[in-house]
Length: 261
Image (cartoon, rainbow, N blue to C red; front, top):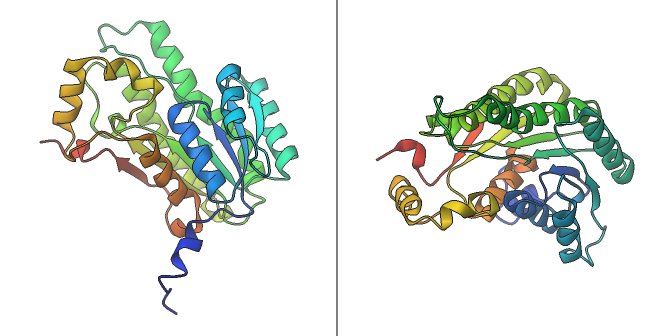
């Protein structure tokens, strides 16, 4: 039976869904949290920056039910285990996981020092692995569960002066596809969103650099830069029933950056 136009918005709702968002105090993580709340989800918000996490929760005062918050470092197994258990106990289960914790750093293969390399892989790739590892047993108990990870356009095209960052995000896309294959029989869908240049606290230094801004504008086909809400809308789609037949996908959200000029 064809769906009517009126019924379509319900496919993007998350009413009754219980979601864990890492990196929730960052620009993209915060946008995801606000979007999920607006779509009816119950939330557990995780971030290593306790001050910013508390500030976010204050700005969400009056939300029902109030989000659960956990200060945790995704590179530490004990922290991750504690955060996931707190989320599951507080929410009564887990249906959606969003991995938005991540960092960036400049450096080519010649200029990136080993400490920076390890730090980016620890946070961006290993941190995501740890969160997924702890969350999957609970997601398997859900009906229609979803994992959405924030990757990057650099995993698709590589990036000049972004060796460690590109490698860590490329690993995320490979992990996404492997998890999609592993978890399909359990009904758990796994996808990633690959943003281009997005205005956020992480990209703030570039926002102040006229040369960098000229480059990003020239490399983006659409006549604007991305906003955190653009990413949050894509994450909502991949977490909702609207994408019920989508898994193992890395969704470029880059204004056409990956196409080049």
